[in-house]
Image (cartoon, rainbow, N blue to C red):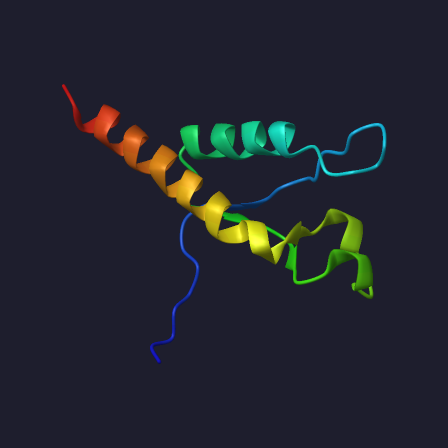
Length: 88
């Protein structure tokens, strides 16, 4: 397996919560979209198979079952921005 290193700007995102202490996925998506629009090269997401059983920071973790959907959305936004920037 090739040794891959992070390059460019990679940000760690804060986790927005609702008043009931659950993750606010709508606000979280807005934060991610803004990071991508600003041109970051990657985002750091905390992911766990079962956040309720995590030894630390479980409340801040994205459930791993939602990761594929989130990544697809991130890639779609990034692709759209890349196309828009390349169009004169």
